[in-house]
Image (cartoon, rainbow, N blue to C red; front, side, top):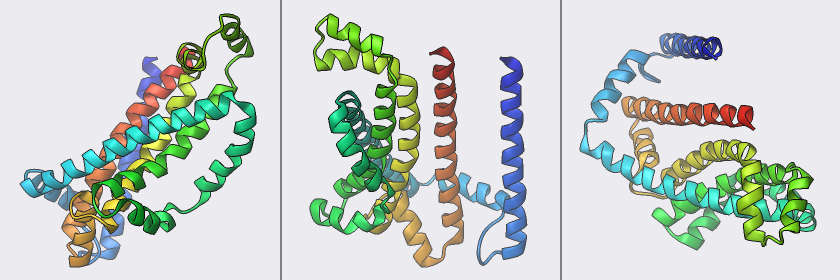
Length: 249
């Protein structure tokens, strides 16, 4: 286990080092007009996170993202358990989910605005529609892979659909469900930020869009770095938990 952990840390260090080298080389090629160096970006980001304006936008983004992720997970799990357990419904609706998943969600944003209006509800809705489908698809696959003997045991004990999902399907399918949550996390974050960029007055997405309009390279680079760092840290934690659950089960 220690050797495996050591290899993982070494590979992560190599990846981060390679990205920093590529970033610095790209900065030397593009110059100050287009971007900032890694050191300058980190220094500006350290100053940015001490400002009240940044925290106002950060809190707005976190509120919208947390709500969108919660909706995506709850609806994705409910839809996935229903379609995975009820095979006829799954065979009919799953292709529609796959087709919806392949649609660029930005094309749906005008409809989201018409339905929810400007502000927080639109951001939450746009983030949630990015994450619901992957969570549902992974849950469908996880439920279908539950050993049939467990399903038969639940029917022998005359469990209701809710009891079947809570006592049998969810514990058996949780490793694959977590994989879907991990994918849904990244897509929901992207959807929330996109929603802020096009129809919001607060949030990191709005902050980025404003900086792009003013060609404020320092803010563009720093906010992007902070978003990527947050997404990377959470994704690594979810991936480690995912691997642990798969080994355990």
